[in-house]
Structures are given as structure tokens and as C-alpha cells.
Length: 602
Image (tube, rainbow, N blue to C red; front, side, top):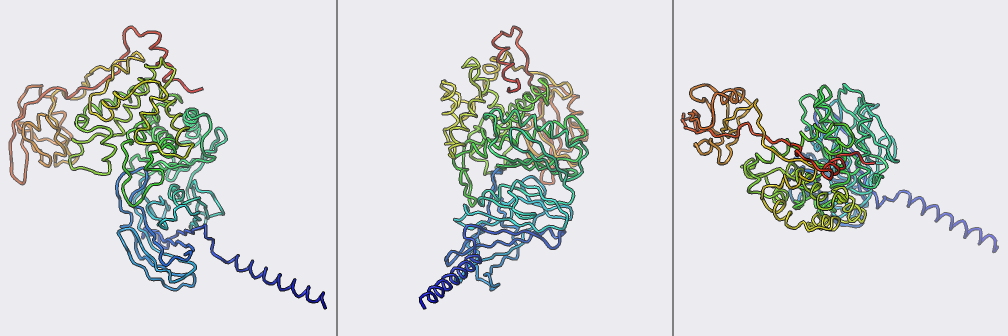
């Protein structure tokens, strides 16, 4: 009798154990949020997205779509493309919802264990940071299309991509199965763009235990192995700056080749997405642009994706993330992007120096350099003023020039025992490896800590201030000087306008203090003639070649449908450029620093 009772007790325990196992097996995974993306008709450009999560006992759940994306410091309001939103429970019962602001949807859970939302997202823009659906491919950046569960961005995510049969998928996300991928958080999910296509061309190479994948979407008229070999050289030079090992096991270069597509790249922690014109590989200049953009975006894997301003560490996608450090995280990245090409011997010394000259010309002819500091340009990038061309500067451009001058100034003050490379390593070890963001004074602090020199005056004058940059002081450390040169292909006489490319000849900008501004011309005027000779963008330079500085000319324009004549006195500097020249008596020290600066890292 006792044995029977024991047997019965064991049976009851086993039954309850099996029942509990069965129940647990069908409980929602409270640490996983499931995303599914697919489409019915590609030419509608409508992605269909489903997100499923456990309600975790909440009466309401808020889902929101970002208003901006990292790498583009502009409110873009992605919610504008959302259509046909709905919510339901795991039984398919409709749940009530309301929109509480422009990009947040609040769901009434009605005690449901599982909550699902469904919506469509219109995607018909192809650039590196946008999303596109058509009959040839599905390309998406998660910030554009995937909502997040508010206050639950650290939950694990699973993404299922429903594609036609035989389509390939390229993404840095960890593969779980054929069309299913995993991310440790929402931020990782949306930081991993995806290309799905039947015609992807791929290759890969390995350096220092990291595999670098290359994927081209579009007609590739170039040897993919050659691109892999060159990219490997760039990878080597950049990885060596930070100690010889990359902070990832896999990295993806994602490329879109399209007719009439401009160069555009966006950085991500484990990948980069780049759009490029169809004829890019047809010329040496185009090939250089390919490696230049690739190099820039790769360096971002350290500088902005891991070494980052404090405000980017856990960004608030609903509002602006202000920092005065974009000049460093974008401009200095540009500096290293080009320097890496020289160190990798993809470009020669003269080509590299010509790029520096071009950047200096751009900066020195930017009116805004005298009224807007590079810190203010960084902070205010969220605003796009109507007079941006005259009032602002590019923090990419000035930041790149500052990267050069800081590198040379550190080398000059330390007799080449330290350089900007050491600053990058310091920032990486002090902040990135400690999962900390760089404070607003962190760049200055790092430079002073590493170099043992006071750089406060330099920053006050040239970073926080608008004083002209000390080119000769810094360039002298490598035996170079900056000289004014003349471009004989351009007219010496200077007018100071920018015309639209069409035949109409609309004045798009008038430079402050230029002859055109002093003579009375205005943005929006339609330029008809110079001294009664018809003019547009195509022949403006040719006409100005006939005149000399000091000549008076009559400009005929339409303004608010009325004809006006303005007398303008031309000045010089129309064909001025800047050239780097070697000093006549370059010292051994200057030559040593010059060689060290451009040499491949060993």
C-alpha cells in the first residue's frame, strides 16, 4: 500500500513537472522583442513591419520611432512615413491605441500577455542613411523604420526578414537562422543596416582575427578582389593606431552602386553603408573617392561609434543630442581617412598634400570662418539657417584642417615623441574601453595629458574662437609653408556670386563684402547680362576673363519681375589658391618629423 502511494505521488509530481515545462515552453520570452519585416508589393515601396513583445503586466505600452539617426545631426521625423498602424494581442483581438505625440503610439494592453503592433512604412529614398524598397532590393536603416518599446531599449531583439526565395542578405547582425538575426539591444538592431537582394556580390578578407565582409549592390564593373586588397591595407593602418586588434570579430562594408547617385557614407559600430555613382571605378579620381569614403567611415568605427561624446552614449532619439565636439568626431575622422590612404600607399605624397591644399582653400574662402567657431558650428548643426553659406562653416572641413594642425603642433612641441595617434589611443583606452563618453572638455584634456603641454590658448583661439589658423607655425615642424598661388584657368577679376546650374542664372548666393554685395546684388536675383552680354553659369568665368581688377561692369538682373542695372567694381583674388611649399633649408629635424608623419605604421 505504501509503495502504491509513493508511486502515485511520484506520478503526480512528474505530471506537474511536465505540465510546468509545457507551460513555460509556451510563455513569451520576456527578454526578447521580435521584429518581422516583409512586403507584399515592392513597387508600392511599403515595408510591412510587425513587432511582438510581452506586456509584462503593464496597462499601457509606448512604441516610438526615432526623430533622428546617429551620424546625421538633424531632426528628420521618420514617423511621417508610417501608415496603417494597428495593435492586437496573441489571440488576434484588437487592442485600443492612441498617438500621444508625433512619433509615439500608446497601446492599451487590456491585460494581454503578448502585444503585437503592425504598421507599414513608406521607403523610397536611396542614400546611405535612408531606406528603399523596390523590385531589385530591400535596403533599410533601422532608425527609419523600426519602433522601439519606450524604456525597454536594452531588451534583446530578434529580426526576421521575409524575402523572396533566393535573395541574399548582407548585414552585421548576428545570424540566428537563414533569415533571422539577433541583436543585444534596440540600439544594436538599428545600428545595423540591411541589404536584401538577389544580385549581391560579396567577398571578404581577414586581418588580425577579424573578418571584413564586402557587399556590392548594383552593377560592379571592377575587380572585387582588388577592392578587398586595398581595403585590407587601410584596415591595417587604422587598426595599428589602436593597438593592433579591432574591437569586433566581423565588420561589413555595404556598397550601393547606382547611376547619378552621389557619394554618401554612414558609420555604424560593425559596418558602414556607402552609396556611390555607377562610374566610380572608371577613373583614378573615382577610385580614390571610393577608398577615401571607405577609409573615413571605417575610422568612425573607433571615432564616434566607440570614442564618442557623452551625450551619444545612450542617445535620446526623441530630441536633439547637443555637443560642441562634432569637429573632432567628424573632422578628425576625415583627417585620418585621408592620412590612412597615404600610410597605406594607396595615394602618393603629392596627391595627399593636394588634398590638404584643397581643404585649406575651402576653409579660407568660407565667409563664416570669421564669425562662427568650429565648436558653435558643431553645437548648432541641428539648425539650418537660411544664410548658412555665409554664416556657418563646415565642421568636417575645419575639423579636418584642425586635425592636421593639432597633429603637427603636438609633434612640434614634443620633438615628435607624441602625435595625434597617441591622443586617439588615449581616448580609446580612457573612454571607449571603459564604456564612458568623452566629456565636452575631454579632447583638450587628452591632448594636454598626452603631450604634457598647455593647449588652452590654441583651443581658445582656433576651436572656441574664430582667429585665422596658425598654418605656418604648425607646418614649419615638417618643413612646409603655405603660400598664395594663382590658378590661371580662373579669372583674376572677382565678382562674388554663385549661380544656379540652369540657363535661368538665378543667384544662389552673394558673398559678404564682395563686389556683388557692395554693388547691390541679392540672392534670388536672376542674372541676365554683364555689360549687355548674355550670361549664365556656363559662360560666367569666360566673360570675367575679359576684365581686370578695378574694372567697372554693369550687371543686368530681374528682381521681382522688374529689370535692374547695377554697377559693380571688380576686385582681385578671383583665381587665388593656396599651395604647400617646402622650405628652402629644411632641417634634419623637420625632415625626420615629415617622414614620421606620413610613414606606414609598422
